[in-house]
Image 1 (cartoon, rainbow, N blue to C red):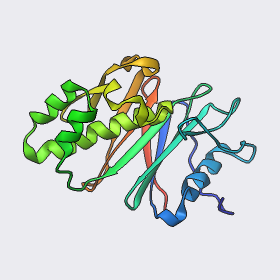
Image 2 (tube, rainbow, N blue to C red):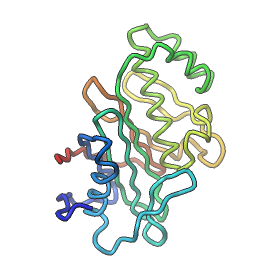
Image 3 (cartoon, helix red, strand yellow):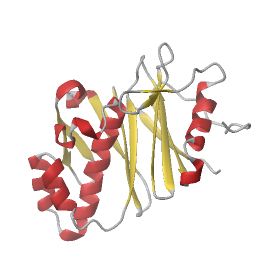
Length: 209
C-alpha cells in the first residue's frame, strides 16, 4: 500500500462513501487498497476473497463493507459500515456504442426489462441498458455471487430518474431488502451502488492520485 494514506472523512453508520478516481491497469488495486486502509485502520486484517472473487474482511471485521469497479480510465470505490458481512457493491460502465444492446438484454435480462428497453426511443436505449446493467451488477457484486448467478434473476423497473428493484430470486431475495442508487456521473459514464439494508446517505468524493 502507499506509505502515506489518503485522508478520509468520518464514515457514519447511515452513510455510504463513494470515491471516484482516475485508473490505469498498471495501478492494479493499489488505489482501492489505499482508500480501504485509510478507513479500516492499522489493525485491519488482510483482505480475503470470496468464491467468486469478492473482496472482504473476514469475521469479526466484516462490518466494514467495501467494493470497487473500473471501466476505461475511471474507477469507483464504495465503503459502508453495517452488521457482520455487510453487503455492498458498486459498478461503473463507460458509455460507448453498443449496437447489440437490445440483443444482449433479450439474452440476459428478464423479459419485462427487455420489453421496457424495446419501448424506449432509439436515443435512450443505450442509457437505459447501462442503467439496468450497472444496477444488476452492483447487486450481484454486493452479494458476492457474480454474473454467474444470472442477470435475469435480479429484475428492475426502469424509471426516468431511477431503477427500482422489483423481483430478486434465490438467496438475494427479496428485492425489498435492497437499496440501489444511480450515481451522478458525467455523460461518459453510468454507475450504480447497491447494498442490502435500509436507506442511507451517499457521499461522493474525488481521490486525486
